Length: 331
Image 1 (cartoon, rainbow, N blue to C red):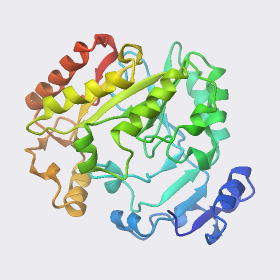
Image 2 (image 1 turned 90 degrees about the vertical axis):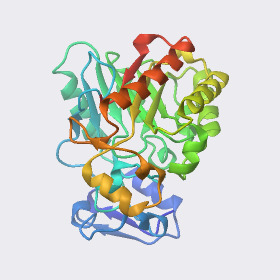
Image 3 (image 1 turned 90 degrees about the horizontal axis):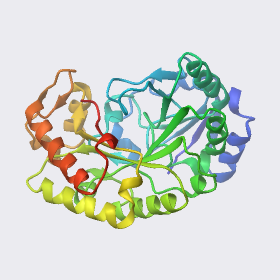
Image 4 (image 1 turned 180 degrees about the horizontal axis):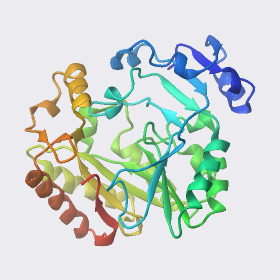
């Protein structure tokens, strides 16, 4: 997967760093002062990740916990996200990361203790439930067999039952998660799409069946689960596709016990949309009639996307999912 490892001097002696180096004994590595001195300094094409992907290990500096945008999660409670990694090993045609960083290289931040302090500082400013989300710039589970941070965050959030942690993923790599004791305020949420759509646009990701099998194992072990139907991409048979998707979900899972189901249509910033056209000129995504939305994003016109979301919401309610557990993402 990786061509070499670049390690900040400040983290070279950490146990996690040594563990990762032992996992890749034949890979060349070098020490650097700061990730920012190297990562993205020379623009690296997004699709170069197919041939040459570097791994950076270091410390996240600056703002470690950020307030999430409106409609990011369930309404009525404050939402934040923390940044423990940059970029993803998967390759989804619509991924906003292709227009966000100047490089597809993987960056892992190892100063989780400092992130935890900032999470606690954020909690001190609120009363009641506060949400924290991992996976905004990465996948929360895909590399946990390397990074090993899950026990740390499980221990942290057990101390603060009024705080909730969401691990967002498309991965079926749940073996490290299954080593933990389920915690009622830590939710693992999976992004799902119909299998034909996954084959077309969610490149290198686990199949729908493998994700559902991983979810069933977690649910049977007592882990709280959520589902993100996001991004929803319209096609001629999309209602039938989502009817089939819910039937498969219902076969593997108890849908009534999910924490939530979020729904959101495909959307891009103008910069990301430019990169999609450049990287995937033959993608079906480009055949859609998009327009500039209220927030500057490129997506389906509002009446059309409300119709799409309404159809899928009706399907969810037909499987006895509580209306209070269904919310619209970024609307």
